[in-house]
Length: 196
View 1: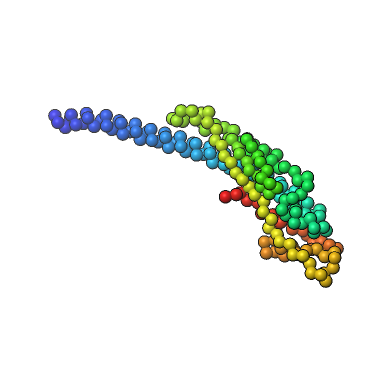
View 2: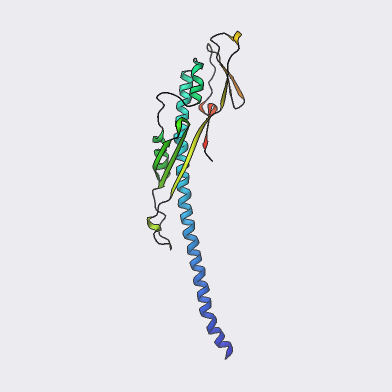
């Protein structure tokens, strides 16, 4: 008699434990869904900021190549001080769209950086947490362009037409204005990375 009574009391406890475990599983699923959406938005923001910075890096490298015989412009070019340098936020828009997001803002942080904020195109979706079906993940990223080169002016006997020695990440480029070898590539001249 006592045994049967105990069995009847254990069943509601068992049901409550199973219900609690199911609720926890659904809650973890909701958190995972939100984290996945957030990670996707962060990937889009990173890609957008890097794309804008890479476009500007390529433009700066092109300016350097065009002005290679005028070393007086080199320092300004490596500092990003180039008249008419174009804003490359249009590249951020392209990359964000390719990663299922839209750019909310793209700011040109001086000549050598871009800050981008994006919102995911798709909502988090329906979960046990109310309101997530209309919740969109947001993220931001900043990319910077850093010159990789140092310029060493030629010594007096080298002649007025001699070009400076260019050292980029421990690689020396000796540039002869009469016979220019293959020039450094944009990735040799500048490093582009996400800011910490």
